[in-house]
Amino acid sequence: MMLILMDIWDSVRGFMASGGDVLWLVAAVLFLMWVLMLERYWYLNWISPKQHQSIIAAWEARDETHSWHAHRIREAWVSQAKQDLNARMLIIKTLVAICPMIGLLGTVTGMISVFDVMAVQGTSNARLMAAGISMATMPTMAGMVAALSGVFFSTRLDSKMRIRLETLKDSMPHH
Image (cartoon, rainbow, N blue to C red; front, side, top):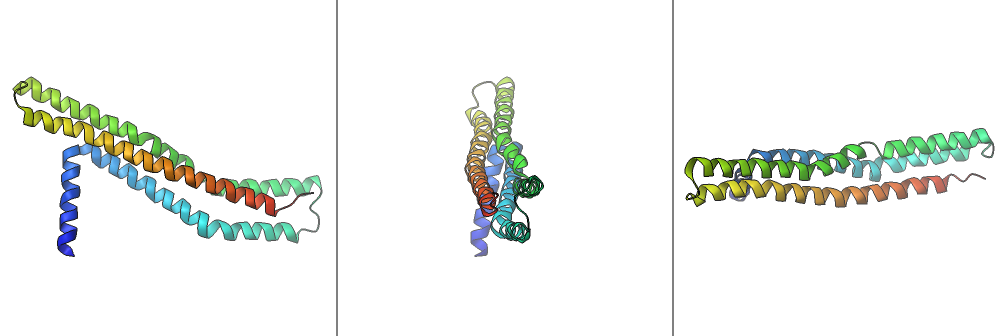
């Protein structure tokens, strides 16, 4: 088991080394994005149902649900639930959006490395040029893959949150 973990770690280190320092930045942004998305999934599946049940119970316990004042209370509760559901979603979407930009930063730094090799050693050292090109393409690919995973799951999370909010609204009838 330990040998397998060592092999995996060596593979990861090799991949990270081939992509340069910018790849570590992509990995850090990806990690933060996934921590926030997992927290939102946890909130959506375990915390918000309990909160929504207490809101529905409070609404049903009201004697009067027809007046203008009662409707404003309902709107305030729904608005608070929406705000709680959407917490950190802007940060998640921002992290998703910057992943390709960080990948492009890796492309630029990798190409600078290639041009530096070409300026110092000429175009005859293909091995050093290939390392720079690898350093240019790996972060771009990693940034795109990170963004794609983030887009897919954040969009799914967003739609689940909208459904949850609509369910809450439908559970609090106003006449």
